[in-house]
Image 1 (cartoon, one colour):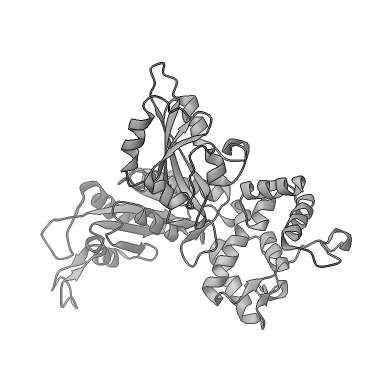
Image 2: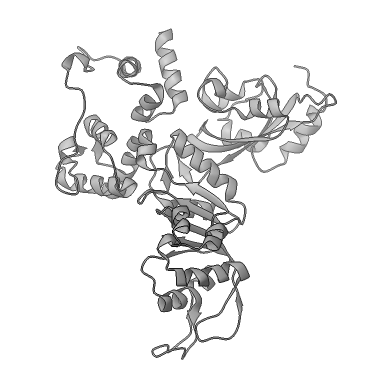
Length: 440
């Protein structure tokens, strides 16, 4: 294959860069891959000459035709860099990958070569995980994309969403993906803070500042130096304290209680609330100037109702965290969880699963073990019509069993996205399974 002009020089330059990079043409063909890409994504095989979507997704059509945005297509059409978040196949399994495609300028302004950079997102998993965020739904991926966009900056982030959606986990992910990851992560619960407690907790105090102050105390602002300060439930902060917080954010300075020396603050601010701050501003319950100061980059933390296809994955992860790997959810229990409206979101789901693990005598958790907060069983809405049940008359090879089950499930699911969530696979994987069944 004849190399396009300039490819050899570009290939030599990329070879020494630390991040995984490939060179593509406009037809999705991989023309070159550096050492980092071969190490992290090559699986020991050469990828040169193959289509990028075959390597990254294991499919035979471009990403945009399989339910995802295609960074190469976006970059080709606009002539500018294009960045997306994908679930890629890797030697370690499917992982969240931040993909950036950059067109290489040509003499006629029609880019023919593209450099694609892959960055593994370590802060979230598309598989069951012992800690951190898990998810693979489009809603979750959209949120994760925003996290990776803003994390490297110093911009203040405001996390919005219902209670129990994991906003502190998001704050941790922002911190870990930032340049301040080596510094401390300090969380402050703003609910119930009195004026005296707020100042002494945040700013610290000098010895003798008040009765009982027998030594100097380091405040949380000082403890967060070089790292991230997370103000949880900031909507609960009284107006009188909002003024003090605004002054800290505007000036970047503070004084310990009882002190006269102005100290410089050095932290990245992440705040969170389940309240509608914009409505509170209209009612005079939250300062407008503070609202705009903390709302530089808002991120919506989706409820479980907004990402129902993630419930099986979340349930499996949370069950392993609270009960260990020996406990497992039955298909009927998983279906029952998908039908439930979780007002407490992930926090409620975790409580439900921990309760179920204690009520289950064996390894399998059944629908009757899913007892709600008031002692009621979680409704099981699985089909009761035996004619619609999946069944076999005899044992068959596992590959054939999988193909038959996927074909049966496709007939009883309203759409592919819902089915993929139920099966705990991506839409691309589902597409591949269904295609294999049609070719069989």
